[in-house]
Amino acid sequence: MLVNLNAVLLKARENHYAVPAFDTDIRMLIKPTLEAAEEMNSPVILQFHEIDVEGNDMLYVTTLVKAMAAESNVPVVLHLDHGENPNKIKRAIENGFTSVMYDGSHLSLEENIKNTKDIVHFANKYNVTVEAELGHVGGSDLDFNDTGESLLTDPADVKKFVEQTGVHALAVSIGTSHGVYKSEPALNIKVLKKITSATDTPLVIHGGSGTPENQLIEAIANGITKVNVFADLRLAFKTGIEKAHTLISRPDPLPNELYDPISEEVRKAVKKKIQVFGSENRAD
Image 1 (tube, rainbow, N blue to C red):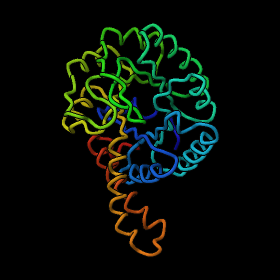
Image 2: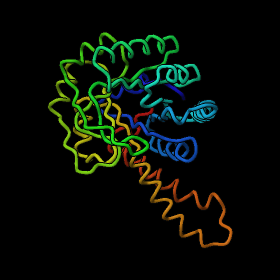
Image 3: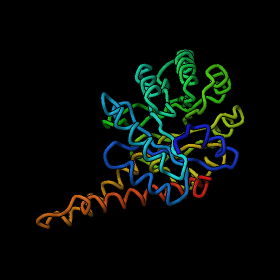
Image 4: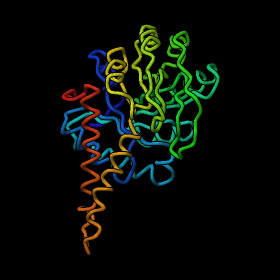
């Protein structure tokens, strides 16, 4: 079933678990990710970036995910991740995304509030939820470009931001970063507790890949309800390719024979995250 963030995150906050949000693509990650979520009976958020839905790829993504979600027995959120262009975000909403993220974390607080409020107003007409970011999660982007140092979310700004924007979920910066870590992170749970006390809005952390499991579990226990994962899926994909490589020496391997090891590694990675986040058997 295709749902928005409210359908899965409000329950997650009440019951102290997090819903996994996997950045996928339109080729080889959607199917094993959804299959793993169904096997674990977990709600799941399938995320795409603006570059994944350029031109006709928008129709491909929405048509495919809608059809798969209609036949799935777990809640599926179709989410646009890190949208920065308001026109592209609105196009995603109009074309069937059930949730979007507006990333104004690089802007001033007042400009971030203004732009987020506009997106929320537009999305509410379509029953689409909006995630925003306060503070800044650094690391690297999809092209491996450095996006700067992380700037922790100021708990003093949270109440004002949420009340003035009406946002449905808030991504906060507490020490994670995008991409593969160069050194082990240390999540600032003290800051997270202050943020959680300031709002009832479901909280999100980006950069869930590579973060030590004990730190993720502690963050979830203290208010995080959505954790974004992408780098760990890419690493699983790479492992699958290495295993599939042993079949290439055969004269005429079938496509599914080459793809099966990749799919299996992605499923294993997804199921492991579901266990850590505590969302197994939470789909009902």
